[in-house]
Length: 295
Image 1 (cartoon, rainbow, N blue to C red):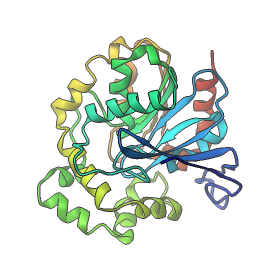
Image 2: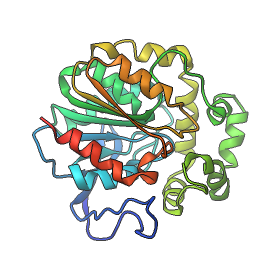
Image 3: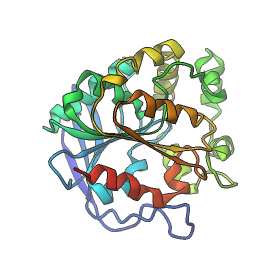
Image 4: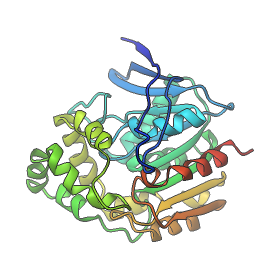
């Protein structure tokens, strides 16, 4: 079954706070199609070049993260399996390798050979795809991504999710209020995450997403993360690492480590931004846009 609809007019986020991204989304189209028997939801906007940007979100969000970016650059932004509006089948293990295969199948389905890749948080699974198919990645942006590097230890919430029974209890008790309180530290500025962000997460935080999160985190101890990034030094495409330094989940030193691991990488540290840095520093989106547009 195929469903495609345009989201016309409206704004992604309110203009009442400088933390919010003002983004008119009249050129963003929403799609739902079957890939390998599973529903996949994605957003697209007309790209500015031959290689569209592929945006990959993390946990616990969806392609909602990228509306402000899509408006500026065009490209593709799927809801990864287990998240948002995409299918959440119980037979998947939600591992790095499974997600890398999904990215390959998704790009084949939409008949896109080469992309400019932007990864955030667990969108880092795109790095597994990039290492397997470097010829298909023209440019690379890594931003506050799960470290496929040596020396990372999971943050407090992830350790809870990785613990059997405790993780299930935590997932079962995650209400809107709990999510709002538990993510207060994710902002650089005092206060919880924006209400629209909270609403977006809670709208799709069903049993399938909770299962996907638990399986994903439990499939990735530190040694698995390090192994997943062993071929990063072979990625010779131009790269930009953008890091919100006040990220409570992934220390800024891992942004530096990513930049060191890649042969042709620039590093942009945002000292006044958190994990979802574009909410604190929407002006910095333009730096990413400029990098993606460069030849």
